[in-house]
Amino acid sequence: MNVKVFHLVKRYGQHFALHVPELRIASGEALGLVGNNGAGKTTFLRLLLDLIRADDGQVLVDGQNVKKESGWKAHVGSYLDESFLLDFLTPAEFFSFAGSVYEMTASQIDAALNPYRTFLPEQALSSTQPFIRDLSMGNKKKVGLVAAMITEPRLLILDEPFANLDPGSQIRLKQLLRRLRQEHGTTMLISSHDLGHVTDFCERVTLLDDGQIVRDMTTSEATLHELRSYFAATG
Image (cartoon, rainbow, N blue to C red; front, side, top):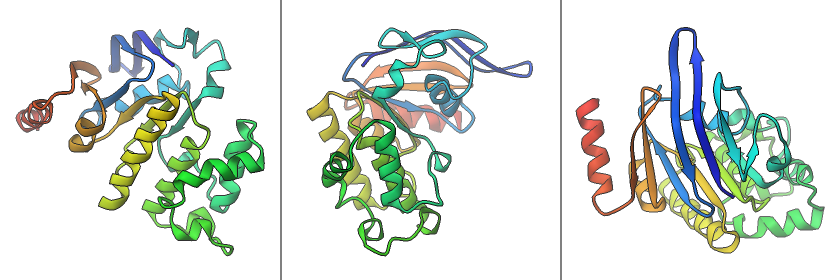
């Protein structure tokens, strides 16, 4: 599933919060989006998902304008923050809800959860499950990520997926994301402050600064050093 962005603008007051003249993400590609706080990363992801409306420009997902069409939504999985959770549900109830939105049966949901059982917190799989609101921040994150992945989306959009996860879970998450790409050809857009994980996982990295794309590079052995040097100089 490909993504094409043209002349995308989002204003807040008289300030340009985001201005992306053009960006293309090829089908099956993993693009890492990096930048300091306030650079416009989350705004960009929300525009892609049609959660907020652009002041100008357009986003096309597999040729469909996200503002005017809805068919693309059936093939997209996303997790940006805790607002994507229904915290009054147990994890099992939430997975059931998320799967049903994509017209998955109970047996399909149960089978889809199998690769993620070792990643999920033990409480999420117990018969006496707590509500999502009672889980730790890291375990809430795991529930949200898994709910986005069990639908086997053709496009997956994640904001700070590695934050609040312990090192072992971060490694396991990358393994699960790689599996999703290998088995289903999923296109991925991952925004993160963790430069190491982004450059390790994504074959391309786009750098936002003050709402503008200032670098768009193919990942190489030099990319991590280049990014660290950039942020050291601008920090």
